[in-house]
Structure formats: C-alpha cells, structure tokens
Amino acid sequence: MKTIKFHLLALLFFCQFIGIAQETSDCNPKSSAFGFGESADYTIYYNLGSMWVSAGSVNFTVDSMRIRSKKYYHIISEGQTFKKYDWVYKVRDKYEVVAEVETFRSIRFKRDVNEGRTEIYEDYVFNHKTNQVVTLRKENRKAELVKDTVPFSACSFDVLSMIYVARNLDYSNLKNGDVLPITLFLDNEEHESYIRYLGKENITAEGLGTYRCIKFKPLLIEGTIFNAGEDMTVWVTDDEAKVPLLIDTPILVGSIKARLNAISGNKHKLTSKIGD
Image 1 (cartoon, helix red, strand yellow):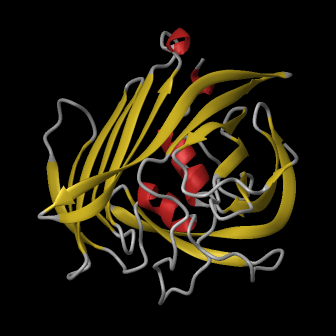
Image 2: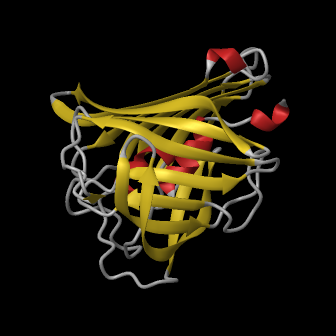
C-alpha cells in the first residue's frame, strides 16, 4: 500500500506554512508563543475511500541546551507509522534543531529520514556572520558523507525552526487573500514559496473541542508526496499560542489529515477554545 506513504517532513511542511507575515528586512519575531518544556502530539490520518484511518504519529518537543554557557532552544520532532502498518511501509523520521533563544535562528539542523527504502541524512551548521551553511549529506546508510558549503539568505529558515518562528508573528493586519513570501532551506538549497491568508474559521477537533482558528493555504512544491499548488489547508489556534490544530491536504494518491491530540507545557493557554 504505497499510498500510505507519508513522513515527518509532510507534517513539517504543513506547519511551516502557518504564516511568515513579516517584511523581508525583519525576520525575527518580537515575542514568544512557546517556551521550554512544550510538547505537542499529532495523529496522521489517511483516507481510504469513505473512511479515515489513523496511520501514524508525530511529536514536537522544546527543550534547552547550553553551549559555552549560552542557552539555546533544542527542538526535536519525531514521526513514525504505527507498528501495525510497519509491514506495509515503515517510517521512522527524526528532525532536530539548535536555535538561538532571542532570534530563533538555527545554528545546527539535523534530519534523519527512514521511510521504506528511502534513507536521507543531513547535518547543517549555519554561520550567520558569513551567511553560509556547511552541510553533510548522504542518501543512504552505505553512502559516504558529502560535505558542501552553501550560501543562504538572512531570512531563510530550516523546516523545524520555521514552525516556531511562524508561531510568533502578528497576523492582525492581514486581509483575506493576502499572499506572503517565505524562504526555506532544505535539501542543500533555498526554496521560494508563499502562503495565502484565508481569514478565520471555527474548527472542531475530536476530543479537544471547538476553536477559533486562523486559516491558510500554502503554495506547495511538487515532490514525492504533494502536487504543486494551493491544495493544502492549515488551521492554527487564534490566540497567543498559535498552535497548529488541523491540516487537510490531498497527496499524489488519496488525502491525509494531521490533527493535534494533546499539548502540554505550553506557555499560553489556548484561549481560542469556544465553550468548556
């Protein structure tokens, strides 16, 4: 059942598009929607005809790390298929970033992807003085590591730090249909894209209740999972936390959803919840 193919990168792509609403000359958020100790769990659902099947999970955790007495964010995200689906298509993915507390700029990013026969390993070290990334990459376990030095722009973020940058931005001045550019560094290069703001909507998540949400559609880059275009829809809570609540998107075969199951250690309460 190759159609069940999804991975952590898919959810990271879902979340990274929750809105980079800043001028290109000002990439750093002015406040923090999250703090050390936050943990969020998601379930991935795949559509089988008239029914949705829970096929895997993704977890995001925010910890701390000290390097030469300076404190940094240490953010880890891990995704996997449920064991009952491993015989069909086994997924074990891990993303990790060390980022500055004040600016959220990443100083090191790691990506370890294991999906069926696909294996990708990447280790990036960002130098913000020279705007260059030293990269180590290999496409399977037996391959040799390939080292490279690649330029990146000041407003470019890796997929994991971008999620948290996006949660800290002000959306109050956006109008329906506004298009906002974003720059992502992945696969040893920068990618230009955008998100389209679609206003606000109430969304009910099973087991969590109904929330006022901010709604977006990203421009996707065609790849192994997605078609190019604005088919994906993302809803984030309309409060200080700005937590991704629900994502709905078609893929090359079928469609998938990512739904928040639980969040703990959050800095702000989800005040967008309607009712008790």
